[in-house]
Each structure stands twice: as C-alpha cells, then as structure tokens.
Length: 220
Ligand SMILES: Cc1cc2nc3c(=O)[nH]c(=O)nc-3n(C[C@H](O)[C@H](O)[C@H](O)COP(=O)(O)O)c2cc1C
Image (cartoon, rainbow, N blue to C red; front, side):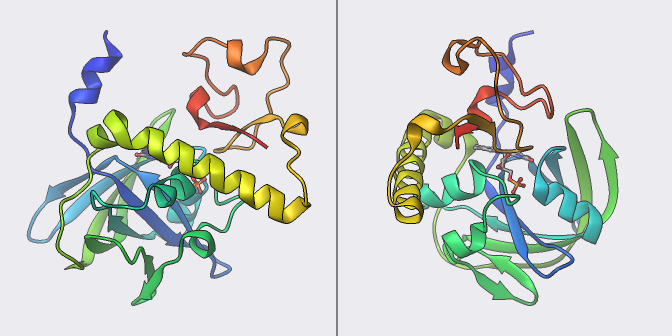
C-alpha cells in the first residue's frame, strides 16, 4: 500500500468544539468530516482516540463545527491542531463566539451544530454519526482544504505556532527554557525519554501510548 494515495481523498478543515461537563469549551482541528444523509441531514466526524475533544463529545453527545476559510489566520490552526485541550484553554487563546450554547470561530465560513446518534470505534479513531440540528453561513469565502494545508499552509502554521509558544513561555517564565524541554505528545501527554534523540527516530515512529505520529509531538 502507498499511504500517499490516501492524500488524494479530498477533505476540508474544521474546528470541532464541545463543552465539557464543567462548562469549559474545548476544541480540536479535524479534517475527517463528511455529510452522510439528507432530509434529515446527518454527518460523520472521525476523532483520534487520544483527543480530549473526542472524550468530551463521547461524554456529552454534542458538538459544533466551524468551517475554516482559505484566509484563516495560521495561528488559529496551530492553536487547535498542535496542542491538547488537556493543557491549553484553546478558546481563550484563539477567541470565539458563543451562539445557542455552542462555540465557533468568528472567521468560520459556516457553523454547524450536531447531536450524536451513533458511534463506531476503531483502534485509532472513533467515528461519530450525528444529526445536524443547526447550520448557517457566516461569511462569504472559499473553504480551506486539507491539500492546501499540506501544500503551503502547514509551514506558516508551524512558524506562527512556534513563535507564539516561545512568546508565551517568555511571558510566563521570564526566560525561554527551551533546553530543559522534552518532546511531549500533544494528544496524550506521553513524554519521550528514549536513548535515541527524538530527531533521529524514524519518520514512521508513533507514540507508544496513543499511536499518533512524530508531528504530534512538541517541546515542552
Ligand atoms: C491538518 C490536521 C488535521 C487533523 N485531523 C484530525 C481529525 O480528523 N481527527 C482528529 O481527531 N484529529 C485530527 N487532528 C489532530 C488534532 O487536531 C490534534 O491531535 C489536537 O491536538 C487534539 O486536541 P484535543 O486533545 O484538545 O482534542 C488533525 C491535526 C492536523 C494538524
């Protein structure tokens, strides 16, 4: 099998949001969204099993999607995709608008609210099927695709997020202590402590706890 072949499947990019039982909004960047039925309208999303947002969707049975536009601020993509709600208050960092009890990005092209009806669990991901209970256009523009992210936006997102994190560390600690940091899985919090330097691990190396790839690790 050639894994690259799967990159030809067209996906958009979305911020998935959910509200935990304490009332805190959490969120995650996702691409795995597809409408699966009409009249009534249903869609499916696929969440990685280590994602905190997935846990909240499972517990509450509700979620909302912000459809990302092509002119999205790259930092927003990093805030939702490169760190976990376990350690970050993403909506406080990114800013959002609460509408009818759900949280959305102000830059969203469209806003969609859903109630989960069924789920299907795979070793890596859980798929949620959900009834669309609200959907509205927010602004004019073109939707961002996963291909656009891979082809050019990713570099901008990485640079913006790295700069932002450095700035946050400087503000919080008074100094940047990069040399004390360890490569940490942003999905499950696993801290890499192996003998082989993290940079030298093979590209197909995965987190031993939750199975995500090296691109889901950051220095913390
Ligand atoms: C381009 C891109 C696409 C992603 N697609 C998905 C996806 O479809 N489903 C998913 O669960 N995670 C996806 N992720 C990973 C999550 O956004 C990431 O693990 C996030 O840190 C989870 O945050 P949480 O723990 O707060 O839920 C994607 C990340 C990127 C950068």
